[in-house]
Image (cartoon, rainbow over all chains, first blue to last red):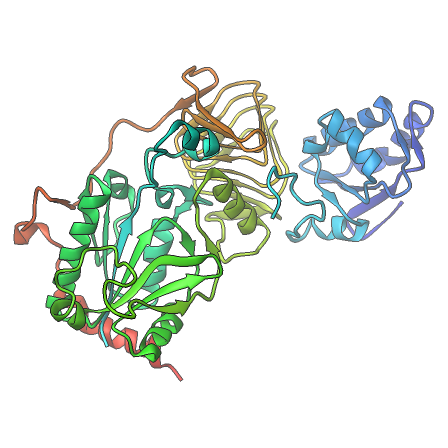
Amino acid sequence: MKGSKSVVVKQLPETVTMNNVPQLHREIASTLDRDRPCLVFDCSQVRQLDSAGIELLLTSLEEVMKRNGDVKLAAVSPQVCAILKLTRVDRLFEMYENPRDAAESFDRFRIQAPSPTTAFAN
Amino acid sequence: MRVSAILVVNDRPKPTSAADESGAASEGVLSKGSMAGAEIMGQSVLERTATRLLKAGVKSVSVIGGASILSLPQFRDVELTVADNSFARWLAAQQTLREHATRGMDTVVMIGLGAYLEWNVADTLKAHFSTGAPLTQLEDSEGSLDFWMVESKWFRTAATGCKLPFRYGEFPGLPMSCPMKGYVNRLASAHDLRRLALDAFQGRCELVPVGQQVRPGIWLDDGARVHKLSRLVAPVYVGRGTTVGSSAVITRFSNLERNCRIGEGTVVDETTVLPHTALGNGLDVSHAVVDRGQFADLERNVAFQINDPRLVSDITPRSWRVPRHRTFPANLNPARNERFEYSQYWSRAAGRLSEVLFKG
């Protein structure tokens, strides 16, 4: 994992499924335990995400919220975005084009790259 | 050069046929009144316009509209006139324009409030003066805007009988066009209202949420209460006195205006919730504009009334302190003691405006 002083960026592997979610959970446990944890999941490599993967995201969110922190997603592919939308989990996370933007967003407001999914086009 | 302003709050025209009604379904929201009164990010278009004028040094501002204008915060140097319908309002505007002329105002900015405009007062007036015409009208790429600048002396002499709003051709070559420089949102529909919120969040206009940015992209106004178990996903605006219940999710590009109540477990996604609206528990509100019982679904382009208070309800407070105002036409010549006293501010206004116009 890499990060600035307070924001931790965790790159997720190509598959985030029930086979490796427990391991991933152990890897981020120390981050989740901090005060006001700021966690970014770098999803640039993720090609497969199942319900266990969704649960990893939700559990992480629950843990960081307890400690007044936040978790954000970066570089989410269209396929993964579709799964997040299907499960309505997309609404719970801020998503950014890249991990740097996501990390910076903890300090200042940036317009998020994915446009609002408005019914009307500009 | 003394400049004053008259703001006429327009009601949007109601549909005249069934075809109109179905085609403009999503425009049915807010049909009770003008979008100028609708609050976006904590302030209405009316309030923002009045503030812009006052900050530019236009000290005398008259606002004419329906009863909704009485919710405008009490500004010094702003006179309110209540008139029931559009016809009466423009009659009142005609009289008010004559009054401004009598009081010594040289140029009057007259705005039919419906659209949200961002314009530089000084630059716009300079453009008006440069035409040499006594009456100019702003226009953008989509056509004319309900924004005129009129020389009061001309109005008192040559145009005294003309009906307002000014129409092209009533006087040869008038009004002259002035190009609009700045952001324009015509607020013709609920879609436009959402677009304005989006543009504000995305920094495409000057509109800034009122309140404090408690976290990057999360604005909370005074008295907003957000349950610790709720989730706010930036960018989001929560208005004054609004409460967000436990396990609620307020997500991307949503704005909850003043005095709203969001029920437990309700998700608000890319939605505008207008003032005094309560959403029940466990709802999923997405891509919509909600105004008390009126619901506009922007994805499906339908608008309808919801009468079930467990879903959506109107929580407008019953007690209401009515500010000083006059009515039209019941009170064509209001008693002197009902009016705001302007005289003490005029000389300061003239000096201040001169600074604004001729700085540098």
